Length: 468
Picture 1 (cartoon, rainbow, N blue to C red):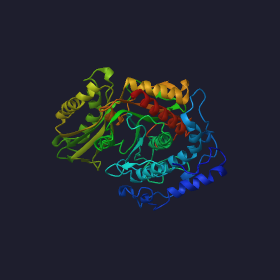
Picture 2 (cartoon, rainbow, N blue to C red; picture 1 turned 135 degrees about the horizontal axis):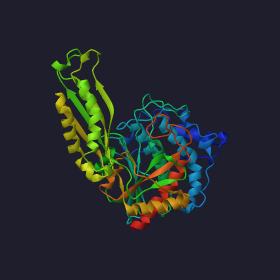
Picture 3 (tube, rainbow, N blue to C red; picture 1 turned 60 degrees about the vertical axis):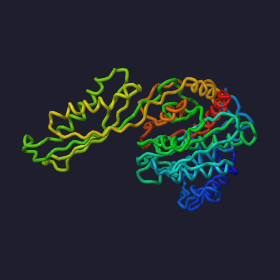
Picture 4 (cartoon, rainbow, N blue to C red; picture 1 turned 120 degrees about the vertical axis):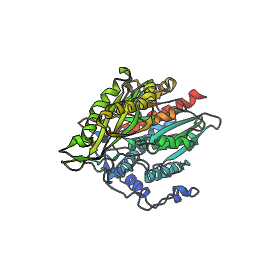
C-alpha cells in the first residue's frame, strides 16, 4: 500500500522520499481510474491538494521511535512487525492528510476515494458504497473459512479546528475532533498487513474492512452499510474508537454495554406573539421555552429507574429577535442518552408525555420531533475474549484496561443488532488540557496508530481461528 516507505525515524531527511510518494498519490486531479479501471464509480477529478499536513514527525512525543513489537507482546506472524515499522511514516502521513482535509458526515467522497486507492495499491479490490462516500473491501484468505468484519468510521465534525499544527484542518468549520482519521489510518494499515498474509496463503478465512460514512449524524451510516450487504456472511465484527483518557499502549475493554443509547429531541413551540408589555394577551413563548429547558430534563429522569442513567440535555435553544417583542416561535433541541435498552425503548413515550404536561399550562402549541438514533453498544462476551487475547498479544498483558460505560453514542450498535461483536477503546491520550473528544483542540498521540494496527490484526487472526 505505502510504496517506498522508509523506516520510522525522527530524521526528516530519511522521510523525504516517502513524503514525495504520498504527495504524488494524493495530487490534485489524480484519477482513481488509473488504479481501478474496472470500477468507474471510484473515478474522481476532485482529489486533495497536497499540504504541509504530509510532513512527518520530526521530534517530541508524536515522533517516538517505533519498535518492532512492544515489550511483553507476541510478534506478528511472517515478520509483519518489520513491515509495519516500515509503513508507520506512511500511515501517519495519510492520517495527517485526512485530518487536514476533513469531510462532513455524508460527504466523505474524497476520503473514500483515498481509501480505495490505498487499498488498491495494497493489491486489494475495494468497492464503493452506493453513494460513493464509503468503502467495503474483502481480504480473501481460505475460501471455506469464516468472515470477520472490522469497521472504521471516516466522517468529521462541524467544528473549527483550533490547533496550531501543520496538519490543521484546511476546511473552514470542519474538523476531525473524534479521531475518525486515526480509525481510518489504523484500518488501512490492517488491510496492508492482512493482504500480505492472504498472498502468502496464511489467512484462515475472509476479513472484511468497512470504512463507514456518517457515524456522527442521523440516520446513521451503519444502516447504509448494512443495507449494502456489509454484514453478509459475517460471523463477528470488531471496531476501535479513540479514547483520550487512556494512554497509548492501553485498550479499554468491557463486556456488555460500553456506550449509551442516543436519540435526538427537537421541540418547537408556537403562539400568536405580541408585545412584552402585555404578555397576558398572548402566549409568552420565552417563558414556555425556559420551562421546557429547565423542567423537562429533571421530570423525565424521575419517570425511570435511577440506574438507567437517562440524561436529557438541550444543546440549542432559540426564540425571538427583539427585546420588546414576544415571539411567535421558539425551539429547543438536544440529545437523550440512556444506558439500558429497556428504558431506551420507553423513552419516546415518556418524553412526549412530560413535554405536554410542562407546556400545557403556558398555552403554547407543541410540535415534538423525536428522532431515534442508536441503541447502546453491547459487547458480546466471546468477542471480548477475542479482543482481550488479541490486546495481550499485540501490546502485552499490561495493555488490557477496564473501561466504564460511556454516555456517548456510537452507531456501531446497529451492527451488533445483526451479528455479535465488540467495540474497544484505543488509548490515544496526550498530556495537556482540552484533550476530550468533540473539542476543536482534540489531537492524538500518533503512536496509537501502530498500536491499533497490531491490535486489530491480532483480533482478526484470533477471531478467524475461533470461528473455524
